[in-house]
Image (cartoon, rainbow, N blue to C red; front, side, top):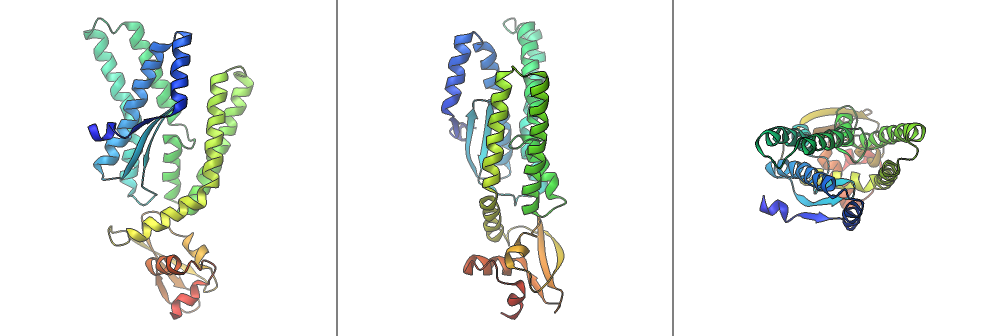
Length: 282
């Protein structure tokens, strides 16, 4: 646990929000939110550490937090699902503790309890919305990866998430046009979508590199994909599925090409537009 606490970082804007809370008399509520967010992110971190994930940092942001890892989409579905849900699960634990505390400790008043339950419920609901980079958005990508190749899942997750964000923005404009804090959050999420959209190729590259490095470390279900000999290596790599070992079968010749051979060739030559059929003759 001490090692995890050493990974905690605080975004500079977080201190601005703290100062704002003190100036406006909402420091107690802000302290509650700070505790909730810390436990939420530590839930992710503890689960990730349990499965041996490489943790980079736990950062507290002005409107929440994030536990960053050095994992790029090649962990088993079960592990990723548990790590994603470990954060929201902390809200349920905290609410249970609050119910106990209100009956045992005089300093924890009924108003404190009600405020704590409200903040927990609000953050839990908000965090599970299908918006990137919230836990709901990560669940959306995990589900999408079940049906689409990883690269397509990246794109469609962001498209759906951005569409949902536009619906939320429209509802906000119609019913809560003067809610400044909510608009700031929506702008923040919009920037996150833009940056993630721009970084898709780099995220996919990290996925491929990690896939190559972990090729012999985990057993995966094999899937057979029929491809034309004229299809480029780049296009073939975009067909890779999460947690499935891909074997390519050339339609014209019947040759079988393992995904590792494709990855090795691409990383050694970087010839992404060469046809996959040329590998069958190497």
